[in-house]
Image (cartoon, rainbow, N blue to C red; front, side, top):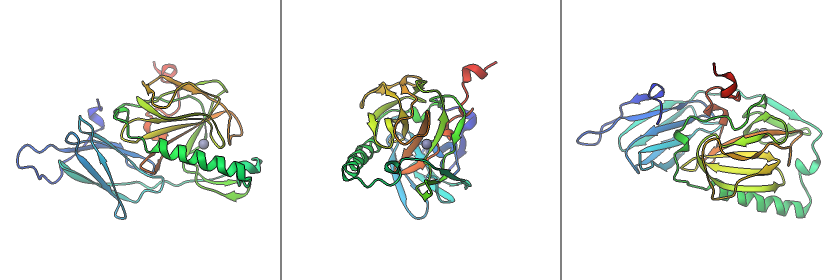
Length: 278
Ligand SMILES: [Zn+2]
């Protein structure tokens, strides 16, 4: 159940002749954030930023999720059969992060055999992101997958060995090798692989409707593709495999190609609720 105090009630254009329900949305309305809402069961929802429109389908309870990209436009218009709303999206300033001393094969690979492997792994990842699980983990309050200091913020513009690269689409949390990584919410595993070139041990977890959270550089992987996991269940352990300079979890999140900041799903950041509770 979604906590009522977080809901923003938006009464949209009433198109139903009788008893139209309100369009309710909550979330973090900033670049990298998200929107969770409730409309009619199985309704089609469109989300438009003025340039392009993404479409999704509510579940049997009418719940739906939308992801906001790192570079999302300043407004998002959400249309459902039970009402519409236009949400202002706050811009985020990102830093530049320089990482040096990486092996050249991890920055600009040229070896044909390695390039073939990287292409094959990119296909696996595309398939993992295309998952559409019928679960509602996205409507839960997320728990941290691991606790520890954040050593790399989401969205940083990256310069690797002096070469400008894609932004950092994850948040890095330092933790000792072997620390358990748990599912932050219910989901279905859409990809599990022990040994990817860039990612090392890698798990994709679909929290419903293609909201996929991703765990990189894992030392060991404890789940299999297709497996249903509950919030708090162990996915594997922290490691430094793939393109990593030390043991940490790189945690990512994506929905329909929108690269999102997973830390925005946590109320208290990456601290252990059990340790901080009074
Ligand atoms: Zn990372």
